[in-house]
Image (tube, rainbow, N blue to C red; front, top):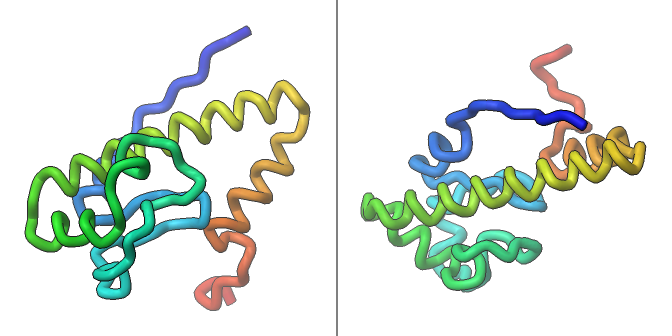
Length: 118
C-alpha cells in the first residue's frame, strides 16, 4: 500500500479562464455557444456545481468576471480530478490502467494526430 500525491494548480488556473474538465473533454464555458445551454457542465458529474447550475448561468458569471463563476468552475475541476484519481486507483487494482488511459485520451482528443507533430 502506498500513497500518491501531486501538487498542481491546473484545476484552479484554467477555471479562472472559464475552462472545465469533463468526461467529454475540455469545455470552455465562456464560449458563446453556451449562452443558452441550460445543461450542467458535465452530465456524468455529481458535483455541487453540476447538480445546481447550468452552463448558461456559469458562462454569465464568468463573462461578467463574477468570482462565484470561477469558484464554481474550480470546485467542479477539483471534484473531477479527485474522481479521476479514484478511477486511476481502481484501474491499478483491477490491472486495467492502460484501458482507462485510452478512454481518457480519447475523451480529450489525444489519440488524434496533431499536424504540429509532422
